Each structure stands twice: as C-alpha cells, then as structure tokens.
Image (cartoon, rainbow, N blue to C red; front, side, top):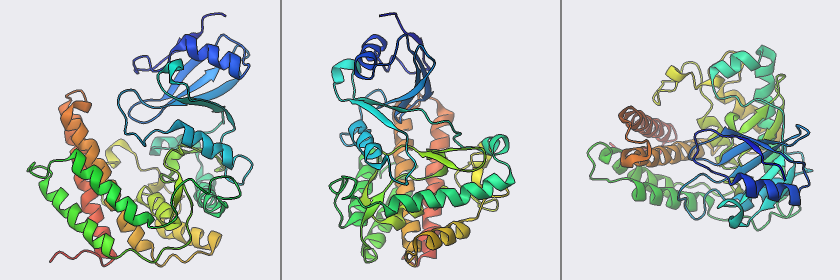
Length: 366
C-alpha cells in the first residue's frame, strides 16, 4: 500500500497514519493513498477531512489527545446517534464505519460522509457567507432542526435506552456542581466569590425545578456553530452529538438561546472584540423571535423557559470556571493572557447567570 500523504495541524500525532489508512482500506474499501487534513483541533474532538485517491471526501472524528473524563468524547455514542438519526428528518452526516479498536490509533474513531457547508462562528463568517434573506432563513431552519430532534421517537430509532428519562435537571445540576468543585478552589480569592454564588444558585435551581415534560431526544449543545449551513440558510447537517441523551427539550432550547447574542447585549464575556457574535448581525431573529418560532414549530408550552435559561447560564458559568481553572493549572501553556481571558469569561458568565436568575425570580440574595 502506498504511503499516505498527510497534512496535520498542531496536534502531536493524534492518528497513526499507516494503521488508520490500512483500516480505512480494509473496512471501507476506499482507495489509498489518503490525505488527512485537520479541520477542528484542541480540547474538543479532533476532526479530519479524509480524501482518497479519487479525491472523494469523508470525515474522521476521534477524541482529543491526553486524558479525558470517562464519559466524555464517546465516539461510539456519537456514531450510534447519527446512525439512528440517519433517515429521519434530522439532518446528520451519513455514518460509514466505527473503529472501537484502540490498537489502531490509541482511541476509538469513526468515519462519516463529508457534507458541504459552512460553520458560522463569527461576524466575519456571516458577512462572507450569508446575505440578509439567508440570515432570516437560517434562524427559522435552526429552530426547525431543533424541533425535528425533539420530535424523534427514541424507541422507534433504537435510542430508547440512551439515557434516563427522569430527573434530568436534578442530575445535570449535581453533575455540573461536582465538576465545579473538582476544578476550582473556593479558597482562591480570584474565584471564591463566584464559586460561592454558583453553589447558592444551585440550591435555588434545585428547589425550583419545574414539573418535567415527557423526555425527548436532546442534543445537549445545540447552537449555530454546531451546524453546517448552506449559503441560502439551509441546515445541511447538525454536528457534535457526543452529549446527546434523553432529557427536557426546553433545556436544549435554552442552550441555543445562551449562544444567541443580540446587538445590544452587554458583552460580559468579551466576545465582541473577536467578533464571536454572529447572531447579533442584522437579519437574524432575536431571542424572543427564536422562542416564538420554536413554540409555533412544536406547539410546546414554553412558560418554564425562564427557569431553563437561568439553568443554562448557570451551567455555562460552571463550565467556563472549569476551563479557566485548567488554564491556571497550565493547560494554556503558561500563557498569562489566556488565563486572564478565560477568567474574565467565567466571571462574565457568572454575572449573566445571576441576571437570568433574577429575571426568573430565583435569585434569593438580598
């Protein structure tokens, strides 16, 4: 077999090129040599576009390098979900093959079809990809994609055992408070006040969990940046299914709203300087418009959404404090500016969570 030509980013040998190439040839039947081009890299899953000798394109996904939490970056789970959803109204890439043999490249990975489309993360992306009509179209298409996820019958597609159907928010609250405690030091004067507030907010949220609706399939991280978009505003594919489970659909909607910036928002996370506020561009629906679209698409009662929105921001604050703590512990390579930036974002998320809790009537501080 010919040696594959490989193009990699700054990841340190995340795949064994020879072994992976052999597995692709034997399992899938694609013709070598292969070109591997990394398109997503870092602490999240690593994603490659793989091209064979005919220049046909596919996508390979594997976990990040280094130690990961036992339940995180589960390639088998992600592959199972897109396989189950293939053929449903939910737009997903075509599943091709899963490799759960860690001897091949040190971690499980899978191959899926390549989908042409754009990932919209910044205002620059909006300017270069989406005209005004497309921005309106993508607002509607995103909500329709989310509604399609929530309308899937988990039993009918073989996902009825993907997760528990009860106490979703209570379990999420316990999980993220635990992560906060594992990653931060409440005696640290820089974060101590934030941690103490998030602990109090956990108690308020836990005491006010709304009556649960019937559990649905939930994506767990549904946002504009996790979709492939066409230039006319269609959703070509929803990506990043590793957190998919059974849970409360309004929690999924709230996650979308947390990332749905508006032009007059207070920039408490410092996103504007990097133009990481795509939905603040003219032409996108505002958050209330997104809620209206979802309510019309699903007929679901959204009266409990303020609770879920506060919960989503509380979760975001816990996540960002964990990231900030890892930077402080050296994950950023000792780069001081990176540590300061992540701490700024974590504090901004805590303040935004506080405001959402006040709006929901759940903040009990004097």
